[in-house]
Image (cartoon, rainbow, N blue to C red):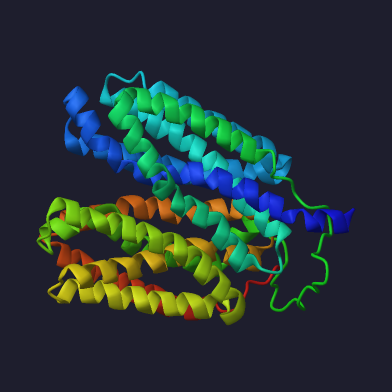
Length: 399
């Protein structure tokens, strides 16, 4: 039975990627901004704020869903997430006020994303202890690629049916696809190890299963949380405002600047797989240190250089590449340091750093007199995070 399940563990990955592609379509939110403004006459800042609400609710619900799926398994939790997401979008098609949009898309839809998001990650990490970096990279790459996959679909629906009907159609698609993907999420049997793989000798407590309370008593948790916050703040600052940076700072026209959004999304998705794979060979902390150095150098260059189109795309792509790596490595580090038994809940708490960065990054960028000042702050934060990685090279010990 163990051998049979080993052959089928890649089916779990199929289900995980199918779910993440649908959840990751949330990154295509900017496509809805102008159609909503034109149809309802809402304030642009109010419409954009829907995305911030969605991401923050998403990160909070990863904690709740992680705790539940650790107890009852991932299949039904991910199914519930797909239903919430689908219903949230279908209700959004009936929204006639901005507060209704916040409730239906931001709260209900965001809760659905957060509920489903942690399940594929937690399940895949349990099936692939031999390649955690690669497999978490593949799982979150699906999320990063969701906007690329659904961008032409959303644009086609918007052109043919209008924004409200597009919400309804997407709600049906997401609900069906996520629920189907959820049925592939099954945890391995107790004591499972892949065929032909021998677990490495436990060192410094690594591989021991920590409860969430025990994790919160380790200083490594707080260092990792702040590192994740700083890295994602820099990444989301660029990803969320790439088009505006191109038009305001590089003096590009809107259509040319929009190319950065696509390029960054591609490097974001690629970084999740490539850094995940490299971390299995180089080590998680070595990989993180390199990523933070690259991110700090890129943000400093953006703050000090007079960019042209080529350097703008190159630096944004490098930031997206490192940002994808952060999202791939921190789930693996959580499993490495605190075990896989409670990885859903434990990573959910660490993932709140991402939700906080979704607000902090754009807020820093828009509150500064110029983008260059915000980039300098982000460069300093990444440099600090790189230094902090030297403090957590040893896994915590369970007393």
